[in-house]
Image (cartoon, rainbow, N blue to C red):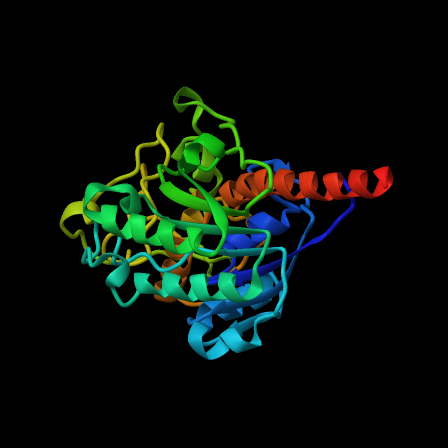
Length: 322
């Protein structure tokens, strides 16, 4: 609206799902998602394979390696910091060690980065488990740490299917705003449960295709395993949550005698078909399952833009009044 670009630092970037959402300018399921006024100036992830996918699809500004090894290369200033800090210790399926766990404790790197950079806004994504009773102390710790840096905090649970993602995925987004900025207003749902995109609508056109590594249309041959490993898609419902450790757990096709392919999983995560994963099966599974759905991220990014644009507009009006 104001022709202003906002600089973004991306942490725990993975293959780039949240970053693609913030950038915008992509098309999926026949719908175009407009380019957004963000410039990602620095990104990092520990997983080198994920970084290769990121470089291929998002840009070469990503730095592979431990965040603690790379944090000193982070720009000293940026408008926004975004990141989905690792969640294994917070997940229902994890070890439930909370933010004291080795992996989820990496949120402290995000706290350190925000302390150094002092962005106007930050966006932190995590699993629904962060809001559950057994993580009550972890949530209080996270909010307290972010509050202590001088930020007003909003957090909200989002169902991805409400925003056009054909997947029953629930995730928490924590939005931090420098004190004095306008309230963050969560983006409104674009679909209701009655109108969610179904699995069949999302991947029907791939049914007749043979395996094709070039387009990541490859699938696990693992035998059925207990619990989620026996799940079969329902054609008239969204996909179950796409998981990262899914080789023996990834769901079966609603019609065909096989597990879903990685391209089908990418569809369920709302990645466009021209987003190519630069890995073989197991690593691609991990990247897709760990990703933030780009379409959901786009809606969050659009709502964050309203906060930032309002500040720019107020600054312009203040200068004009002098």
